[in-house]
Image (cartoon, rainbow, N blue to C red):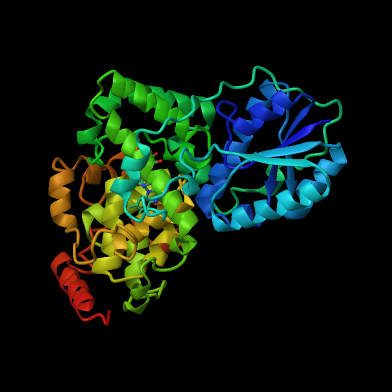
Length: 469
Ligand code: FAD
């Protein structure tokens, strides 16, 4: 009988345990992707990027003589119904860890089991599943460094090769058309502005990993903090959709370490930050929606999403160069350098005293590498409300940070047009990308700070000192 492989955030053929198991089971393999509420609820940029990823993955399946079947609706109904329609004896997929997916997948598993269809899930999106890592006291980790120490020497299974062929079925079930889903509808700048910055699909992801290991990793410890230099792997975009697996990155990192490449261990540590984010989300799903440290509920956050400060922050015109450059980078490329993410998050939550949830939501709408766990952890880390967070009283100074991490202004000159007589093309493309209603022009004078660094810092610290917890 056929096996349905329910594709989710795993748009790849290699190191795909569910797909490999389906081939090994024998019989036709029918890959299916489902547009459910979780897909419909994605932000504009990640939803658009998912559409590109699906198109590319469908082509990769077609090259193997297979197809990607598209259906929409509630998985609890659609997956068992499709299994029945094609006479599938088994449905395989790779596990997700966010609370909504977990609840959905549990229900689907039960429905399939009731219908006497084998339902099996596999590991693939992570290396160290959240329930397999625990402290000596049998609890989960709340601090990164001990988490890292407890996993760094674990063996991670060698990545699986892509199946050499995917057994087709004689009669393919009907599929909806990807164009009809219009996943890019809310992303009007997608095709024209962001697309050139995207590296799409499994092959591109493997090339990125190869290029990183060949030339960037050796100096990664120094360059990863410099937003003006392309010193990081840029793999987050591909990891988010599973166009590459963390285990593939891990093994490449291990090999580089054995070859004595200096930055390799730091790269492995970064991959483990991603695992740690999932660990936290799994054990404390409230990290996605509420202050992880409950006492922060009492903090006087500004929650007015429409206030002038939030508007200026989103539009990259706070008058703070590091902040504005990073916000514009995200709008144009769908990504932001990690240093930029920390600076803009600190500025929003500390200098502007705005709730981190406002920033989390804007990132969710703009990032093509949006990842629920890493985004939530990053925001709560920056705001001081999360586990293992930077303390609230440690306020990044965005001006001195610029002197430290963008000494030659290579980064801000790439993204800010106002200061330069011959602006960089990327700085200009920002004006092509933004809605006309923002009424910004490269000929404008660079704005004065809406909140000066020292004023914002003092205000934040005084609110922190006077808090009632
Ligand atoms: P590299 O430096 O090459 O690192 C390799 C991989 O390690 C990354 O691809 C990523 O998967 C992982 N990684 C690196 N740093 C972190 C980190 N701090 N936390 C978790 N994983 C990490 N990352 C996302 O993937 N999606 C998000 O939505 C996201 N939102 C963030 C929001 C804030 C406020 C902050 C401070 C950080 C956020 N990050 C997020 C983490 C980090 O900024 C990005 O993972 C990183 O910039 C991606 O670039 P890269 O692939 O070149 O990373």
